[in-house]
Amino acid sequence: MNKPDSLRQFLTAALPELARDPDALTIYVTQGTLAHRHGKNLGFEIRYTLHLTLLDYRGEPEQVFLPVLLWLRANQAELILNHDTGVSAIAFDVDLLDNQAVDVEMRLPLTEAVDVLRQPDGSHAMTVRDEPPIGEVTFDPLTLLRQIWAPGGDAAEYLVGHPDP
Image (tube, rainbow, N blue to C red; front, side, top):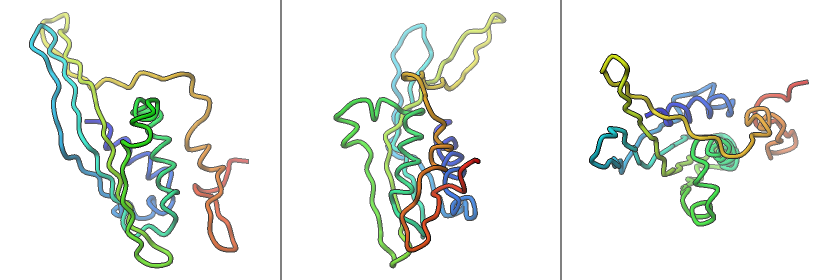
């Protein structure tokens, strides 16, 4: 499975607080199922719920939601392309710890296709398939996040570092 690590890397790059304290993020998988049919094709699909928990986050929950949604655009686009899943499939809980910190948990239904292909020498190679691109990507998600102001007090700060000059 590639998506849990991909999401972890993306969030660490997107959220400065997480980059300073990577242990605040826990990712685990539940409700996994395998989709496969009998036949010559040995490929299969992995289906699971990814649980993302960010503890003691010193920011607004929306600052976590937006990077996750941007990651989904590239890595599980059908969740947001379909109206029904786009309004109900991405679940979350927020525990308000105090005036400055929250715990955020998100649950994402993800899939990964695995190809098992016969090689010319008769062996088989197994690879996790990349997601097919959906439309033309017109922006870099991390660059976009650097340009979005985060809400907060008298001194607004950038959600992700400072924008490139």
